[in-house]
Length: 371
Image (cartoon, rainbow, N blue to C red; front, side, top):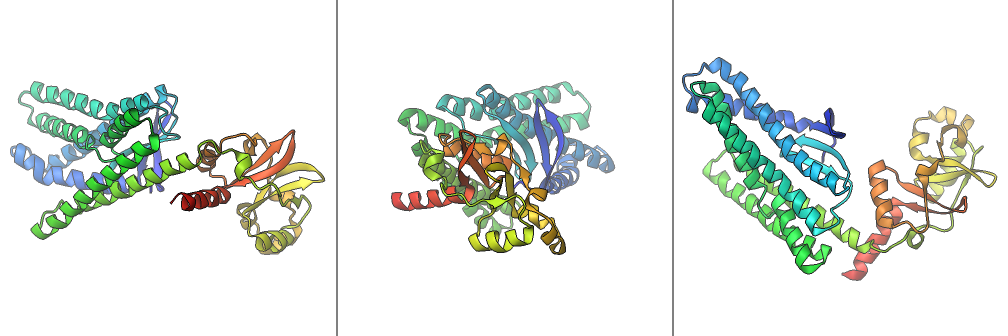
């Protein structure tokens, strides 16, 4: 969903990224402020300069969104939860965490940090509004940002997971029940109900001609899919709790010789076995891993003269895992590093391989047995 984003800054080690959809919203907000808001609240201001004020107000709005997300992120870092990035996109902003909070207290403090920062910003802009005196342009911008930050903080407190209010609800349910999965399920269901309410409101608004009906529909769809995704992640975490690599890995590993040419490798291994990658050995010594990604970059007429060791990814510790590692941790690592497989090493010897597809099959079977 957040592909197609560009990094524009880095704050406290956290990349700030802008999704292409943000530019659409920036333009719409600037247009609405310049043609509707400023002519209503400050009709004496020149129309031509309203566009500049609109752009400035839109930029300050998104700066407010960044501060909102940074507040979540700073609290997350206090609880040793890494933040990979903050991305501005069509619905506002999202801070991407590498893992979920480890306790209800961490969840609660992280969730409340965002709305609290929005209310503080609202208070700051209200003070600017009162101090602006006869500067109508500054007053109009400050009043808009005061209102929008109060709305932003309040909207995020709706108990619709994964919004901040939904995370507060999960923290409370988690604390009371002691069951993370139960709390996530209840919070996600509540989030889906609120999402369906927005969708229903959007359809009703369509018949009244209200221009904001499309936004209700989009927000409802986004919240519904996000709540479903969050529940699936929680279910995965529950299934994989206490599951070790040795329980899921393939013990019989198919390897290829380092001198094998790529044409033979494609015909006799990739097409025959259907796997996405193979360990590369020279005798009994592990040299690396080769996948289709490396072979795709080699023209067909050169594959017969190119060996596996020429294009493989050289083996290092980043590809190695232990039999006793938690599978949930390995799956997170696969997603973060965009890797499809890790090699299981014991006493400096290759004893198995664990793949993302293997974990997916394990989850599918476990899920079917539980249902």
